[in-house]
Image 1 (cartoon, rainbow, N blue to C red):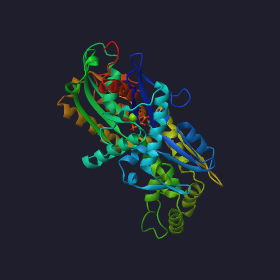
Image 2 (tube, helix red, strand yellow):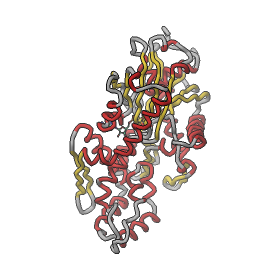
Image 3 (tube, rainbow, N blue to C red):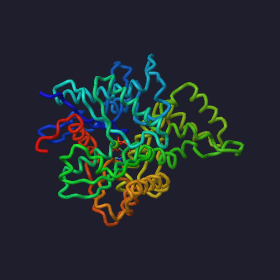
Image 4 (cartoon, rainbow, N blue to C red):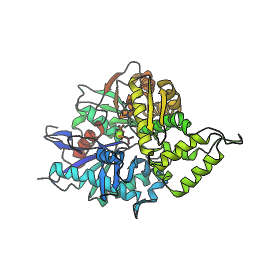
Length: 424
Ligand SMILES: Nc1ncnc2c1ncn2[C@@H]1O[C@H](COP(=O)(O)OP(=O)(O)OP(=O)(O)O)[C@@H](O)[C@H]1O
Ligand SMILES: [Mg+2]
């Protein structure tokens, strides 16, 4: 039997693993029957066990003593990757925590193919880091090292939107020019690809890839922006000091609104600073709420409520963010209009990146036949309508929102490791 291979889509919010089975790409069950795994790690201090995915989030939400980490992929392109973090009495490098998560995905992959897989294609955003090629290469290098330490020996990378294009191509009936739109938790990625039934069989697709572009803006940014525009105001963000000379410092509010930075607040130094901020505040009762949330380690729970409110606003004009504090119920109404206003600059940056993709291919928008949408954030109404308005004549195809990239990576792996799917 030839050595087995697979594809891993390590996402900011969700991860998937793809394999080829019976000549077709398929996703591996990662947690029970679920083929997606939330990219979350929980170190449980009570049983000293490490949990992943939904189980990690559930344990944490059930108030088990421990440490939750989310949006770890965003750490790859940041200075945090060179730092260690305290896990109970140990000091653990972020790169090793990413390794543990990849290792968990590998056990599922190995299990599915009943082999110790050494050949893998890892998805990557077009840019881990915007406008800094050296830092971007370093981020990919860190991911590669983490995968190698878990036992992968032959590691290739593919742009996530190209993987999604390969998945889409499985269903096309004739040649067309497709703009692949992959907007996830961390990044917005775009490719313009010539897809065709013949292309499915070709080993080298370079000539069919007309442009790639991306920007480090995604759903976790929308979470942060919505949080700052709504619930953080109720915790003192943008309120003045007693002397009315300035507003309270913004940094800790940004940390509390940013998935991968929440834990930075859980230190004695941060608590001392928050007490000082409360002392200086014109409205100390607002900062008291912030201190209450930090004291009870409710930061991820709050961020979860904000994310859920954002998702609710996809189908509703209004919703609420509710969190139970020690002495009161925090209940903040949010509307689609507030959300749209909070993300409008971010949406503009994403729209400009779509324009840059077209410019990179040297094509007018009218030449695009199909828009293929994948990634959870393509559901955001303002974002979807902004992008679709640029292509009034194009056909819109909604892909598997969470699975297209993983499926495409399996197809890419079969090409890269020399075992083209049966029938191709
Ligand atoms: N119905 C919805 N409306 C708005 N946003 C949504 C919806 N469903 C999911 N999302 C958002 O989609 C994001 C997750 O999408 P996805 O799983 O595609 O990202 P990812 O692949 O993990 O991230 P990336 O590819 O950027 O690394 C989250 O920010 C989530 O809040
Ligand atoms: Mg993704």
